[in-house]
Length: 205
Image (cartoon, rainbow, N blue to C red; front, side, top):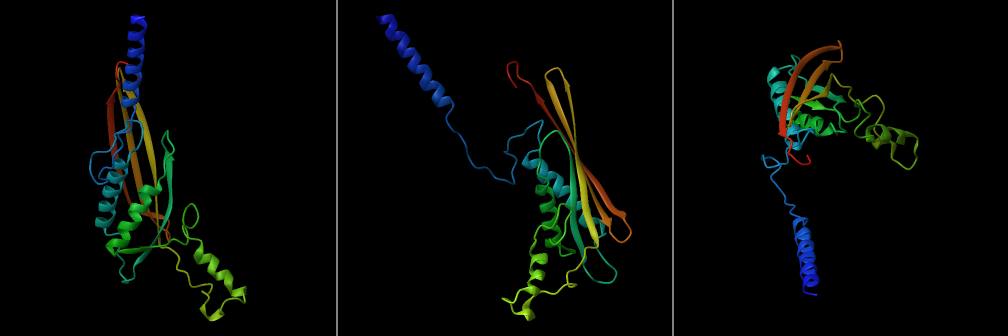
């Protein structure tokens, strides 16, 4: 009888311990800091920040956005090819680039056209209102007034993995380019390289 009670107490204690150990310890962290989870095989938020910041610095300092006629260049976001082993949302990179360009005042960006279609369909949709008698036609945006882009931003994210014993490593290569749409020539290119290593534990991973 005493043995059964001891076993029951041990079972209850183990259950309480497991429930406590599995309890949530979630917390918010500074998105601009270095406290985030570092995943060897995946691109984490800090990797996107590093790639965007280095790309932005290189692009803005290159001088390719400046024009001799004084007009601001119009830039469209084309496609960022995903050549990694994971599903990634490359908008994290392109949106940071786009916003930095706008803040710099050196160029404008268009949302009316993009490599994966327009970010904002409104520019095209409002022009269909010229056949809708509900709207005052003098207020409807006319065809032939939208401004086409001069340049296109594109790129690719490549991943290579390696391991040696318990050590796992991922190499991420962010390639970015700016193309002059009049000539089709690349007027700026740069790469950001990030390497991450981790040691596999004796049990699990």
